[in-house]
Length: 373
Image 1 (cartoon, rainbow, N blue to C red):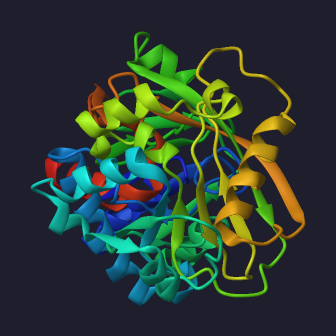
Image 2: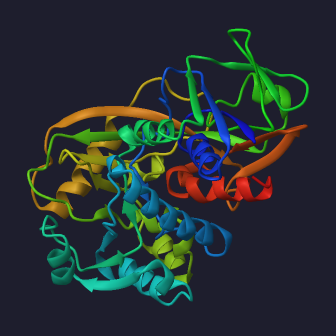
């Protein structure tokens, strides 16, 4: 079988991966010379802890298993089963963590409530003031800025994979075929469009009422911390954002403890992970209303700096990079991804939202299974 994959972000690349793994020939077409979108501009977190139960959690857990296996084969991914800690302060935040432990699927996530001393023993960099921390053993991380290149290089070793960068697919023609902006036609037994946040042009022509929206976020990266941050770290605002924490305790937190005004205005949470070079990737904000602002604003970075420093108990290293990114999210946020046959032999797979890096291997595996690869 010959599979045409359009888009070289993590979702597209995982579709290519599964096709090659099953013995098929793959041509992957990317409009940039290499992927440059949300698949690079993220934390690199394989984030199980906050996922909704049911299909979303099942997908995340399966993806976590697949990521670990791929990481063993491709060490350049930088896969590490680091887990995550969410420090809490005060009775209201603590109650949300305790409610998470009472979930039927708590053991599958690897939840455990640690005292502050236990959390510091696990992650000695957390010298700041907090009462306890929710530990999630199943969380992990990879290196987002280099993961796509590492996966591509491994795919090239198969001899059944071709990467065509700097080509934008403009048209679906006939059955199982697309034409790019060089005028070349690419035909296979299946075409999978994994276009990420690129929802105009061809995608709009194929699905005018696509139930997917674009979301913009701001992030930053520091100089090396100078010591290991042995786990990923979140703050209690992530309880408000992730569906796994929905509970009466969360309702009480929302009613009794307002978010910081900057965090509320920018729909913020703290997520933080250490890169292989020792720097910290820190974020994030959420902007949903179009048109998006073209600049990045300083107040969210100031808020994140305060929160991080309060957990670390020390000044944050110098900020090296600030950036904004855009990803595609299903408007029905309970859906893991939008997967639709848009023409004979042509499928569109988009809209995983912030789950993209986490869930992409399992999303692609399901596509491969459904299409009978």
